[in-house]
Length: 327
Image (cartoon, rainbow, N blue to C red; front, side):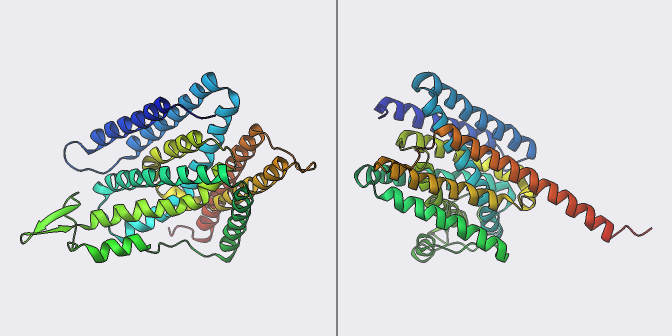
């Protein structure tokens, strides 16, 4: 189903308006840290906004498209949670003051949203012309799933490596030694220079784009509708900044989240290959309905999250027993 131009304009305009209001509210007055209460309110608001959009799709386009949106949204949001750990590393590496972290994340995510939009448009056009790409996407997702599990079993920690664009920005523009408030440029001795604020925004934005190499093929495995792919990505990214502050140290306790995400990517990879075979009139290849995908994704995330929190509580209890307080 091809969405009319007015629907694209309405959705993009609405998202930009909400983000503008968000920025105005949290950035007015003096710079201050983003509180847990603020983060909780905004995460709830963005989740409700996504649910309302899905309900609107249900009434205007039917349950199948709504189901595709919810499956894509949950998948993108789940993958984003795992990526937040890299954001923590970036913030620490660039020593971003806490009072400016929310602005860094907002601008970085806006950059990522624009770049993902281009990536989605190219991907949709390519898949429409070259159906064999579904096999490539499926194989890539299965490989990624196996690789995630392998790295986790080896105990290899995720780390941040500067990409080509970030290195080019560092070389091309003279940079101030330290932060100048929340400014991205500053005039020093009559010379205009960029600040580390711009560098870290580029780092967040381009790193998130690299994450899209996994998430965009995954959502194309759930729906071929570019409008749903874009909106699911947009709603997931919009709530990502507040989720960063809300989770805080909780992210370190979600020890099984990688296994859950690997299972979801593997499932979608297999689904892509089976549906490609089904479209090629291979009789034994089933077509997996969207409600099955939605159930698998939702159940997997609930199980891995609950299991992670239980393990964290058991480990904390063992730690207290091993190191009793001295009286």
